[in-house]
Image (tube, rainbow over all chains, first blue to last red; front, side, top):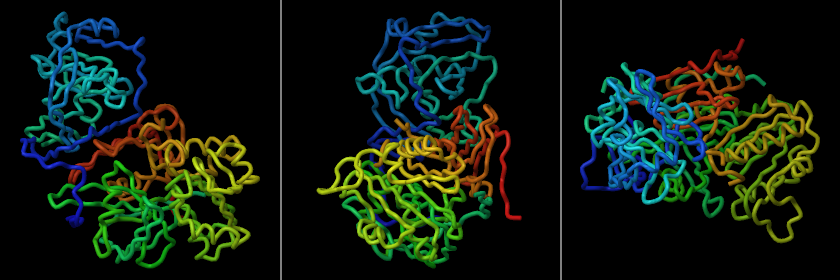
Length: 199
Length: 252
Length: 88
């Protein structure tokens, strides 16, 4: 049972906005990472969707940027309890990328440059719920926040929004990712406070 | 020098601020009374925990600055502009206030007062804090083991322990202190200035034999750079112990 | 430049929480590349959502530690072996 530190409140901001249980509002944009920031060159950048039958769909940077993109404003909820509301992103909706992909898979595994992975049901990437985002706050997405491009899935905890996205594998079976194999919840719905296994 | 695994779970202790000592305009030494403090070795650190009224809590690690002294402990806190904990500890935390901490922690970056081998201590910015604990412990223990400190800091205004370092330099033939200013040196400065490089290390450290223990502490970039210089000067990796405080590139 | 990592020294407290022993001076061997060294010299990322200690040679995770109230998860698969010195 810890004691209270008189006069300490941390970085939080008071808010009347409704936040998911256990979250607090921050004014900055914390950078959390499991490893070094990868240096990703645009002339070597590639995004792949690999289906359960081994079919590979690829986009290089030019092809990716030629796709229709949209501006979205979303709230971010990190499992470490900070939330940031009304963040502005620009990205390509996963529905656009998946439109030419034939699959019966139910699961997806997102892979980042480096060794980071995260898993989610394919349904959670579709129907306007996810983007491959390349701009934040009107500017190119910085490397520390996942640039040149990251997955953005705001209805789940932010660890599911894989930074430095390399590709998405569509799978018949669920493959837990980097944090999911270390006690974090397999699904991660902030509104049901699904932070850890068993929550 | 092999260290044993340090056993036992640590309990959180409640310390109280006995006195605050401003070291620079942005750094403050906290003198804490810690009932139940088990003692420590220089180089070890404590974890401190702050808790807000709504239960939000956060922890940080701080190197112990003082030699063992019963239930009294000193920490030197550098206020970071964008910090969450350091502004509280340097500006709000007042005499009599409680602070949860646990320790001592660390079986690796420690100097044993019974060790007679010569030591070379190289600190960048607030990396000098655990090294100061080593120097203070050496003096308190009456050790004759040769010890040399090279302390890299930006300018006179960022120099920690200024008065004490001045007194120590020249007191004891086996303890030598050299400050290197990386940005601005004081007028009339005859010592080294600029980032520590191979020439600087060679001039200040002198010959480095295979028995010299090297302790390097400071921002990650500083420690990486100094460790490379030591290896290039012929020191083996086994002689070098390091403690990195995180991003900051050069000496703070 | 230094990219937000510290070293394994600050694992001392968390490892004592979960194992009751401070392993920062213990020497580990990377299961990926075979590099050996004290765990204190690993590259530590985190502390949230978890602590990840990476091999200074190849960058592979040596050790991962996540903490929730009353629960810890420790993954040591990245360490092929740990040598711990104990008093005789």
